[in-house]
Image (cartoon, rainbow, N blue to C red; front, side):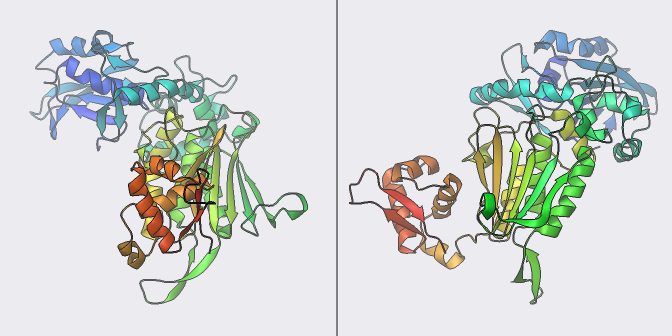
Length: 453
């Protein structure tokens, strides 16, 4: 197995204290497994150091604060010498609290690394950790027999599990220690989770014009207001199929030299946005659902729940990894629905830039996050060559703000001085991309606006 977000292997020569930061990192993220006695392709086993077995079992109590929940087993094997042996397997549950080492250091699992957090990152994690409790809470009066058997079978196949279904669900923290089905398990595998979570659905709406309109002017296309229900894996699949049918197409010259139809927004960008919305939405917020709005010039995806802690939606690429629903994230990764390596937002940006479209825009409301994927071309290469660096960023910030901004506002957003920012604004104005709105050169209320084409 490759080492990833949920799995790491360590040599038996490592000290229990050295492994503690990996245990903390898993507990602060989505949980995971540490296999001890495997190193660099060699099955070392544990028989040569029997005294270490108890030390590893006690590591959580001895070196982590508060002590993490770790289930420690010895799994039989044949070591690289051909001898009967065993390896130590630690299964670490995702935690609702932030853990650290006794020296105060805090770690978070990101991909195949256990990263040490700065003070501000740890504070952000502290603010949000409590939200991860919800997908681990039990659903009353529900058993494994009430779940979707074909979907569970598909999940067993995807994970390669050889034990019982109950053992697999416990290994993914989808069943509590009291053998209760968790909210995450119910949302993932119940035949119709909306019986208990009526807000857990996806609404897809296609509009005829670039403006939504209201009342008699509402521009919803007849027959294209669709509600997608069902367990999360199937809901994502059905929603993706519906969106693909509704996304406007345009003719474009392809690499083959022929004009072919393509979506106004690349499929991988909106699909990643949809998956992120479903996996990371706040299921504890009643009365709200995920909305996918399709316009002639853009796609907007809104999901309940704000960005974590101190995250700044105006700088989405700087938002550190955080899974509001760690159990749901893990299962979706197992099913290849989302790789969940903390790269979802990065991938959306890359896909939009790959086809020459402007960067995605994230807007945060009182209780939700909206992602805008606009079919607006980035500055072409010829124009970009005449402009100062970061000029595209100025345009992206004006679009993200969805309102006119002052020179000071833009300077603060791009992290440059006012004079350096003014150079970029003047250059963009000379190219006809933005315009200045003010009564005089010293007008304190003067702002910059995008030029509409």
